[in-house]
Length: 219
Image (tube, rainbow, N blue to C red; front, side):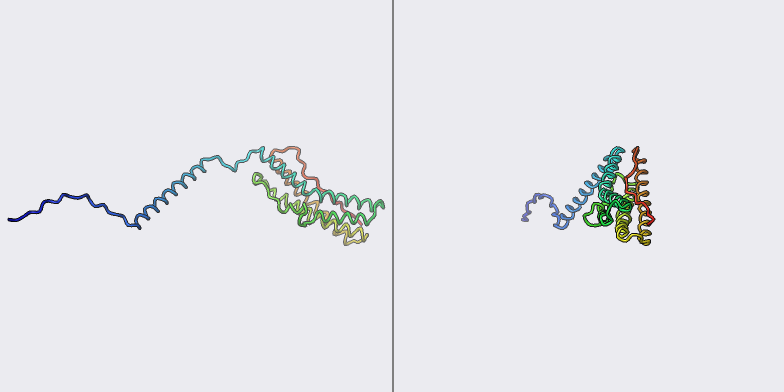
């Protein structure tokens, strides 16, 4: 007699177990997709947000006024000492002031206008224009003011001191007059640029920055 084995009940369908490598690949792929979604959302938010670079006309005028105030302050010592030195030179020429004293004042003016570390004029070379004033070419004005003080007035004051010690030196007179002419040009360029910017910003009554006038001499 043949014995037939009882039928075996079908077991549960076997489930494939992913390898550690394929599991890590899927996790990594998910992280990349999630990061891409986050970046896309941020880009959309930035594109839809109001521009942060938009500055009102009122703010631009306020920034310009503050900038001019800073420039006046930085040039204040140079301006004042150069004016005092020139006045002393005129008095010395009339016999109303000691030439030694006038020469000392000229030396002080030269140092006040020189590009020395810690000097207020030296701050002009480090001045950073507000971004709200971009497009007004004010960097040209700042540069011209720096040249006016450091490359024109400072050596002119040194030339004045030398002339007070050695009167009648034609070479010294030529040097001083040349520097005085350059100072006049650079100061005019700076103030023309500032006035043009003020006009574009709608500021009325702006006259520029008062600069000491270096008067040419004949002897």
